[in-house]
Amino acid sequence: MTTHTPPTVYIIGAGPGDPELITRLGYRRLHQATVILYTDSLIPPEMLADIDPGVEIIGSADKTLEEILAIIIDRTRSGHTVARLHDGDPSLYGAIQEQMMGLLAANIPFEVIPGVSAYQLAAARLRVELTLPQQIQTIILTRMSGRIALPQPQELASLAAHQASLALYLSAKNITTAETELLQHYPPTTPVAICYRLGWPDEQIWLVPLSNLATTSQTHGLTRTVLYLVSPALVLPTVPKIYQGETSTQTITPSKLYDAQHDRLFRGG
Ligand SMILES: C[S@@+](CC[C@H](N)C(=O)[O-])C[C@H]1O[C@@H](n2cnc3c(N)ncnc32)[C@H](O)[C@@H]1O
Image (cartoon, rainbow, N blue to C red; front, side):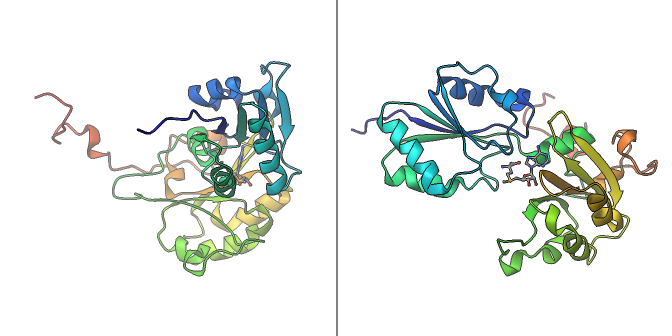
């Protein structure tokens, strides 16, 4: 017979910034914790505004993996429930794999609660579907090579060849090279949304043609917390006018999902 040990560590996705965008489960688990370790560079303090004053809150931005693990292990062994709060969705550029391996090695049970990633809030703000029938059926989530080199088959230029919707994380400092690589396959007029601090009070979004991507990003002095969303869908008329470079007349092919002629399991008839 196996016994179930309840988790003592919750790895929680906080979403991109707006405290309303954490999931109900994430919020509930966060409030079960007696110690909270959070990525203070990417999570606004408002996210923790209603946490009980007796809860220990620790920022992790200035800590090494070893220090973070040592705190989690120490607190759980002293009987605490620890919330490890990550921005966005923890499975994306969250460096959680090594934390989970450390917890596994220390025999500490943990649970992961997903979150809304930055690219999802970008699509919502811009009011576009990133997957359009017959046009775009793939989304690529990637980053530029920086201190961390990309595996050669995943270099940006080769991903650009798919002309999919593409969300570029962690790339503000290398945006000139990113633009050059993207231009190898996307037309220069392809719209790109430059999304700065989505969900934060000072959020800003610029919608520009790909050929103006680096210049716009640099003119505004953007170096961090920027997501670049490249997508042919961004020309559609649902994109709020404040973001639109020029008025669009483009049409779309509606999905078969709600097509009256299309048999569906859950539609009577
Ligand atoms: C360490 S990664 C974490 C990504 C996160 N796990 C997610 O799912 O969104 C940090 C990068 O994500 C993007 N990012 C995270 N939060 C953002 C936000 N609120 N606005 C814009 N970009 C954001 C930026 O590209 C930033 O450099």
